[in-house]
Image (cartoon, rainbow, N blue to C red; front, side, top):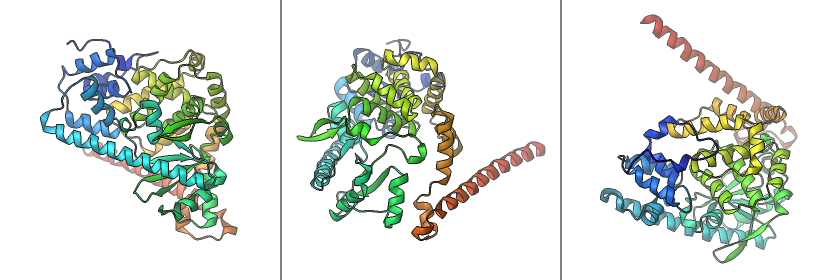
Length: 419
């Protein structure tokens, strides 16, 4: 088969120009398989990729990194009807079965968790995890899940923590009441370990307060739908709210996992009649329109998802989205890890308004965290001093980074002079 055929994984509004992708059949194969159903075009292209030698170690490693191993395994063995090389077949079979077993464990813990919170009058919304796998992929075992993310109202966080701890969940933070109040006011998630060893993250926001991305919780709590998981009805976000939250979550992390883009692509494909006026209005109000557009553009560029007509005008007005998407695509191929400084610059760039960027800088540099609380034990009346400690730590880190850069510059010049 010819390798010059059209590449469906890269078809879209404006194909992503990544020359290096031509030399990575492993990544191209992952992009083909990063979907619920393999179209005939994607299946043909996947088979054409087999004309090139595959680095199986790299393929499996990338599949694990991007949490796409279950989809790769499923489409390779079921959709394409192929066998893995004998030397790794048994290992991959065991890995897939282990993922199935973990998915069942996660679903059992999810049901128990929602029922436990519900018994105390605390409503909960499963976010991502096995519930998202069921709704988007039709099978929880096809999405590689690490933990359980549960959305609750901010006012319910202290009672939810007490409820889970009394039921045997492990609280590794062990915050004082004053620290817990400050944590809930400024952060977005609180992690506990279930008796089965599953990390449960109670979330009352999608991002910390310092992101300055206000999404009123009643915005999505007032539009809940129902979802059946393991025969139990649970709360579910509307498709419009889910899309916005998924794009904010993925954008917050720089879209470092392809599974996050696969989720966006599947949601867009399964909900063609989404209320785009609602989505765009709420994205604009929160200052998260660029984050929304970035998620949709990346799903289009890398997975071939059709960009809805309603987004054409906002995209034409904001060309920065395509520039950011190009950079993320190239980093994906090269495997380059962002530095601390480049990550911070990215987080500023994905915000479309300067006031939001300024608020992010001010709040990020002054919002105390458990790191500062562990350094000094201030009484509640002096809690404001933790903000100054945070700023001092930030200043020290900035000076250290600047010093390291200056040191590297001087060393490079010395080497040149010596030569």
